[in-house]
Amino acid sequence: MATLKDKAAIVGIGQTDFAKRLPEPEKTLACRAILGALDDAGIAPSEVDGFASYTMEETDEVEIAKAVGAGDVTFFSKVGYGGGGSCATLAHLAAAITTGQADVGVAWRSRKRGSGPRPWTGTAVQLPTPAQWTRPFGLLRPADEIGMLARRYMHEYGATREHLFNVALACRNRANQNPAAMMYERPLTREMYMTSRWISEPLCLFDNCLETDGALACVIVGAERARDCRQRPVYIHSAAQGLPAQHHGMVNYWNDDPLTGPAWTAARQLWKRADFGPQDVDVAQIYDAFTPLIPLSLEGYGFCRRGEGAAFTEGGALEIGGRLPLNTGGGGLSEAYVHGFNLINEGVKQLRGTSTAQVPGAGTCLVTAGEGVPTSAVLLRS
Amino acid sequence: MLQPVIDDDGAPFWEYAARGELRLQACAAPACGELRFPPRPCCPQCGSFDSEWRRMGGRGRIWSYVVPHPPLLPGYTELAPYNAVVVELWDAPRIRLVGNVVAAPDAPLNSVDPARLRIGAGVRVVFDGDGMPRWLLERS
Ligand SMILES: [Zn+2]
Image 1 (cartoon, chains in turn red, green):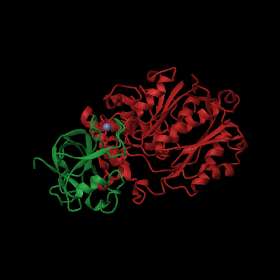
Image 2: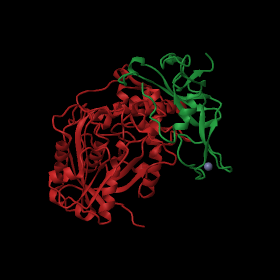
Image 3: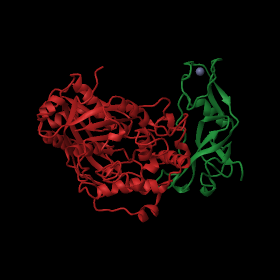
Image 4: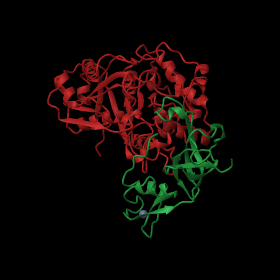
């Protein structure tokens, strides 16, 4: 059977500044990130013939292609479900390149979520299914929807706020090493965490990701071409999307086992096509819109067994030198929240050996997209 | 406060609720009869498009809950902190309904001290004047 294994590689990454408010519009930010990524790769914009992004991306291929000076574009794709689409953009481009539909692919995300509106405040556009079953009852925001699963998880497995703090702290510590991170100069203490204001009990302020203006992009080409590029190639070893049977999105309350989320489905597919397993992952970039997504994902992707995800975070396991260094740029919790694209670029930096919190000799990296919604993931290797 | 944005599949639920009845969609194929929620056009078990609305006992237990704090939407901000719960029905444990535990059918979402909520606590459904299902603690 034909597989994607190591057939395509990320050869360029680009990003703008990250801030609560950037003056430039999303389109400008997108162009800056994309041109930065192409420059990093040493590839001319006129060679770009493939694009992939998220359905929530407001800049489109037509505008972007003509602004950056792309050539004739023969593949373009957008993936749904907010942050769940991040890694799938790479998967779609890798598939397109492997099957000859394009040669040079660009994935991007540009978002002014820091200074722009919060999506949950939109009341006119709420989808009838499943919003009619949740929103009138005051379950309004993603934090409320995930908080519901988090409390159930804590109840079933004895997870505590200490465990969620471990996640928040690991991300913050890495951000404190990363000058590009929004929280670079803002250390987090246990005292700050435990006394912070609630957003939706059991989740406090520091269990929630940042609100960021910023854009990122990366460039993907076939493995052969990748060897001639300016940077050391980072190969897409395996890729998967995940929409479990009888799944209901972020309000996954109506099936046998609501705590077995999309991560489990994506993981089965991801590992089935890989030459290595969870024990061989040197560093992980796991989608962290909310701290409880980390223990849930650690279980889903097979780093520990069911119910052990919270205990896994103990003893500095997520720190540099721990069992599984996590979100080494600071993640969505402390670097920037751009629907997880910064996790992709950080994975590339780790495998190039250029992270600001480098894991010595890192050769494999798991990157995941939003958990709790139809998701995606990639295994990267150098 | 937000009113339910009702779709074709969900409409019967709200029509029964307005009459004070908790009814859920069930497959009407004789060999199947599987309950499903949220409602949808056909049965994921057997593929039948025939469905009926089955009266439920209206008792359950709290499966999980959150206590939202601002920033929230107008109408909710004023009530915060309030509770939002997921209730597991005794007669259909895989069917869980999002709702609110209140002190009386027409009492506000913040009428019960959140400290009184526990996962596993027994609740029973009531309907407020607008036909919205609410939940009362069995032991109060
Ligand atoms: Zn049926």
